[in-house]
Image 1 (cartoon, rainbow, N blue to C red):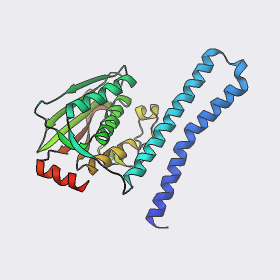
Image 2 (image 1 turned 90 degrees about the vertical axis):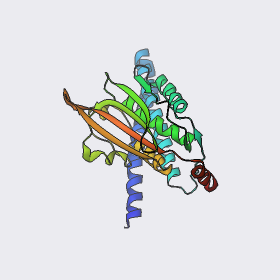
Image 3 (image 1 turned 30 degrees about the vertical axis):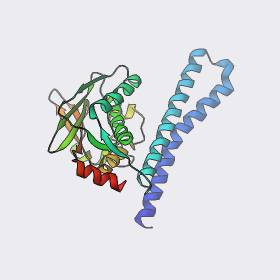
Image 4 (image 1 turned 180 degrees about the vertical axis):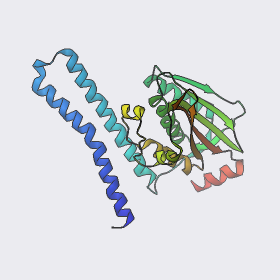
Length: 248
């Protein structure tokens, strides 16, 4: 069996496992409600319906990620490049995520000297959404998400950081691979497909950007760390922008 076939079988096996868990929950709680409706009190009915809703959302999110992975591997995955105002784009993403995580604190510090970047707007916002939402999901309860912008070696640099469980340096590359999940108390509480960071890295690199992660342990608690994801997107001149436009 060659590597391509083996990778395909591993992929299908992992996807089947990921799909089975929410589907089993949805079927189990639906069957319980149908067979025992008259015996269940209102509180139990609401609890079971909430589980069904949560698992349905998990299933939808997984399918959306699977479609994103398929598009990334397709030659027809088209990027539409335009100038983008970094500040307004980040503010838009934060305002959407705030509604999903009302108890989380989001701080945005923008460097006014940051120029526009030349990217696909939808895919850039997908990158930001994945990283900022991850920060909210995997933060400790006392943490906040800090988003900053700046300039670094002719790149627009965006940093998303929070306090979370420390990531070992040997896992820095692993977290960007398909279905990767670092095992710690926070990730065990949060359901995920392990595809978000793989998709994020792929989109960043397809737009000539780079992404890094760094985990700086806290002095007073080495199990926790300042987790920072750094994005770099090149600042392009008019000629470079025109060359990309011609190739679209």
